[in-house]
Amino acid sequence: MNKVEKEIKEIEGQVEAFLDRELASPDCNPGFLLLGKVSESREHIIRIGTSILCTKREVGYPGGSFVQAIVNNDLMGAFGRADRVNRDCIGFYCKLLYNL
Image 1 (cartoon, one colour):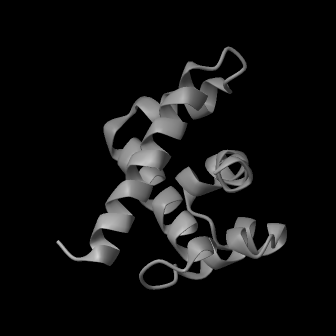
Image 2 (cartoon, helix red, strand yellow; image 1 turned 45 degrees about the vertical axis):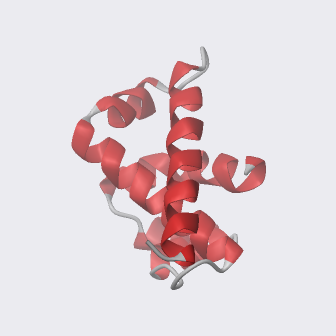
């Protein structure tokens, strides 16, 4: 595993830990809680969150148009490019960027 792959794996761990903390929060949105616990959605959230942080930190290759919109603080662009899961997770991704 090369240096970039190690960095990406480390970021992925940070995203997963942050997601778990958010899901354990007493003020967690019930819809987000369900998304975060469904395996397929959880993996999608972790993958996109990792892409967001990697794009922000310039690790590996830049993310796609949704990720770019989140990193660039383009709310309309983010909603316009979001799939169903990402639309419900925009708040989480913003917290992720702000806190990590």
